[in-house]
Image (cartoon, rainbow, N blue to C red):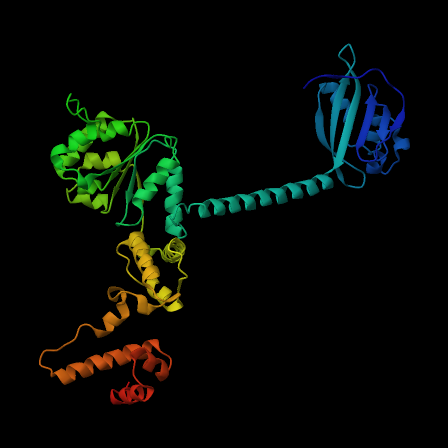
Length: 442
């Protein structure tokens, strides 16, 4: 520590402080200065301490142990626990003050009751708990902030996907995205680019399925012909991101061409690839080159379909309706029954299909409330399952019509609480509904 020097001042006095417990002793161990509260720790007044020897007080058990002798001997700051006569403990710190000969002229000590420190420790523990809570809230906020430009990550699986992306984005490591058509692989690839150190570089998206095998090499690496002098995708992506969409659509020959090109231009860009199929199974079935697999499949990220992410599905449905009602300036709201119906559809086209249907419902509905009646026929799963298939072979037309009528009545009863509602739904009178229900014993 830095040596502290004090001009000779042996005047005995009580220091005018009621907040700090400070005692100054000279080289002989005599107390020459003390604050008003110093004596209280030991059942004495400050005036009682002035002029006393710490050695005598130690013998009397007032100081146990005295800190002055230790500081003089070690010639440095000393910290220890002092036991008081009442059994309480004090944390005391002694600091040497040197004269011009580098001898310890005075010792300044200050102390705190351990109980006060425990209170402080409790406060620090509480503060640490508060910090942990805030960190948790920040983490929750980060998870919520994963929603960007229409992409939703409310489900547990998508939050895990976004965490993996956030972790991989700053690193120049190949990322592979796997998921069904419409789950948002291209959007996620762009997000990775945006979150990476190469965000100011180009984002080059290559649809592998759209490039004929005969010109794939030229498209990737370019051409040096004087006539064409074409720049390839790999050169265009330098200092940026190259996104290879649908690499599973490439033939074995095209895969070889791609592998050769990627090895030649390695580390000049960020590489992201995607497939709809599981890459492991493609390799097992010998439909995808193993060496290309290991080059692309370093950080694999699987995106589950919407039907397995109900939290995301419901959010996308509502956001899409809001988007299109605002875009077309139409007052439209989904009824409860159609919303529940939408949540149970298969959505093979995932987000693309959801947005397509929501735009259709918003623009085609003639009323402010969109109901199940507004659904296109191919989305009315319940009616379809109730009516199909029909066994017509060997039956008369009358019997076929009765079968259809019975199925329609059964379906209507499931969706209506009263026969009056059924009559309104079917476009017939309420007595007719009652009569027909009795006819088929429904």
